Amino acid sequence: MFNQTIIRVGVRYGVLCGVVCFVLMVVLHIAGSNPFGDMGRLTYLPIPVFIFLAIRYFKQFHDGELGFGRGFRVGLSVSFYTALTASMLAFLFVNFAGAEILQNHIAEMQTLLDETREEQIKLLGKENFERGYKTITSLSPSMLAADDFLRRILVGGVFSLVAAVFFRK
Image 1 (cartoon, rainbow, N blue to C red):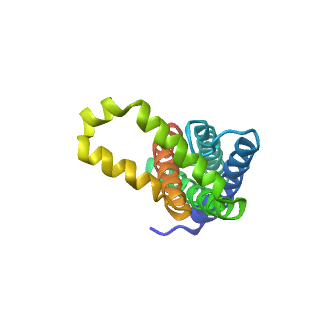
Image 2: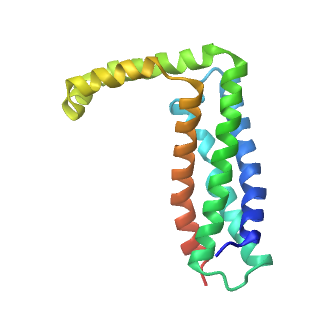
Image 3: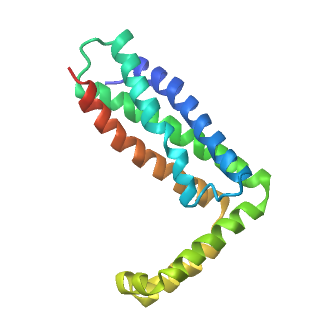
């Protein structure tokens, strides 16, 4: 059930992928984009690459008869450590780089909500929309990091599923 080899491969590829995602985040910030907004989706590109590399490595050097379950666990391990590393580094980045990053993200999200106000009110209702709009103003670095963690783990889970099907025996 608990396989240390899966964890070691997950840590190796996941932490490296998390660092690459963070570097992309910093590059986006330096280029003048919001790394947590729409352009921030570019930072998710390394995740499927590293998941495929990790499962291929695991199959080649540790388990030639790799089944779906083990392949999926390797992919989930990589996605977990990627999400953990990238979100911790993003938290530190937002704290040390200053509040302007967070304020820019909040302003961009409010602008986006203002542009799609009618559709959002139809979908959510007026009071839920207003509550969500007010909640955005109280966004903190830890909430931003937690959101980043959940998104990366979700994206990694989907790609782990695809990669496990691809590499099964």
